[in-house]
Image (tube, rainbow, N blue to C red; front, side):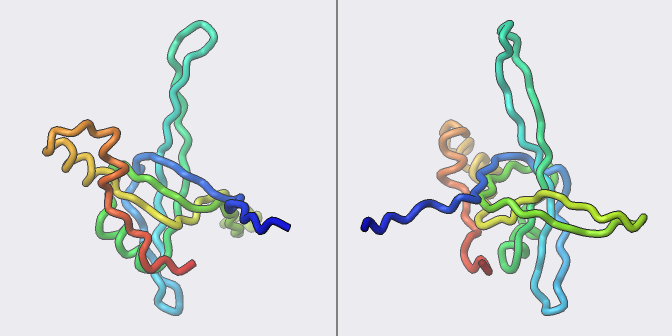
Length: 143
């Protein structure tokens, strides 16, 4: 038999801008948890040739040292590249109703604003250089 390893099936890659500063809290054991939202835009042409745009707002959760770095480096409006997995979060609201939300648990986050600034200073095009030059904060990820 072949020992072919399939890629992880629950994988999300997003590029968007923060809609607010990250909110960082700590578990009872002292582990940092950052939560922030990003706006992800999509542009397309409709059948008449007119450009349309749609924005989706996505909640991102980061754990441990990655959460701490998000707190230090990310601010509202900055562009980020997020890799992670989809997860549901269940909670009970103030009226006692059970609610479920869909969020992305980050495995890796790249800060694109720093790369854009350095690419502009170097005279390079921002689009191609941003992802390649962005600092990676995936070291010490707790999962």
